[in-house]
Figure 1: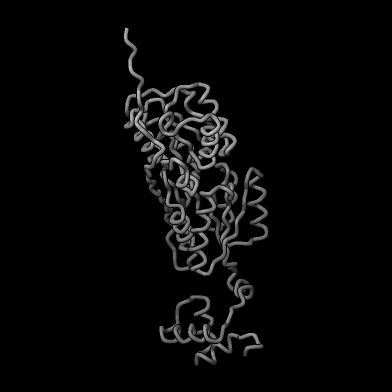
Figure 2: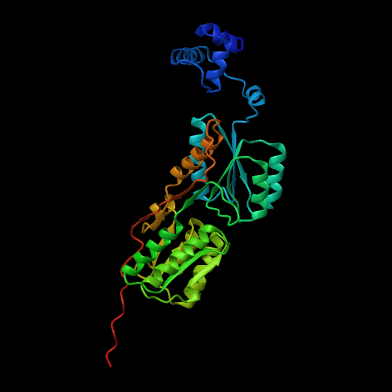
Length: 344
């Protein structure tokens, strides 16, 4: 059979079972004894049988594909989460299709994807929280999971990172080192990560009886360029002794400013990033970060969606998961050294 395509009949004959049994094993359906299943799997391996995925999708109306609508795949967080999603899907015979929405019109991309119907389920992390787009998606009856997006009028399966406690712990750590003038650079979009991060920042400061000056908070795009701009503004204002960057891109921009102005971290400025990466680990000094388990987040999202796709899962209860963060302390933060009082 080396020069011929192995067929399902060949597998059935080799395994000593009926074609129906082979089909059920290939499509991972019940109704096959353990011995027969093992015989079929052994024959598939020995003969090198490759199921016709197109024919199978026509029969089952499944594409074995999951779509991931992501704001910016160049963002290290999204690309790492996508890796975790891919690993989990691949183990279950599914493919991952990436839609990089960027700043384009999301609704048009989603509707076009619906029309073509290239996927069985969706993982959604749009640039904003436009409820009209989600309403359209819910009408399609295609299973989906939200990633760090929240819609007040709709209940849906979602995986959230605990931005609130992540930023709150970062602020509390800086306060424990004597810092009271703490800057925070984050997104200007009205999305859950920004809302929760700001809430964590304000609550931590309020709990310690510290006032927050509006100028200490800088809000803009999640880009290196805005990180640099925000750093320059804080430097001109000259008050903050510690700074938290709300994303990896914003952190890179802040570090560019630190280097340009020869500011010593942590003697002159304590610095914390949000998201761990090779950049934060290999910097000198290594940067303290709020860390998310990105690979695990991706795998959990994929697991939840696959469970929804499972024919036997009739549970309609909405499931939300909040994933904890961890403050990884490195060398970019230090106790605030106050200048000695001048003698009168």
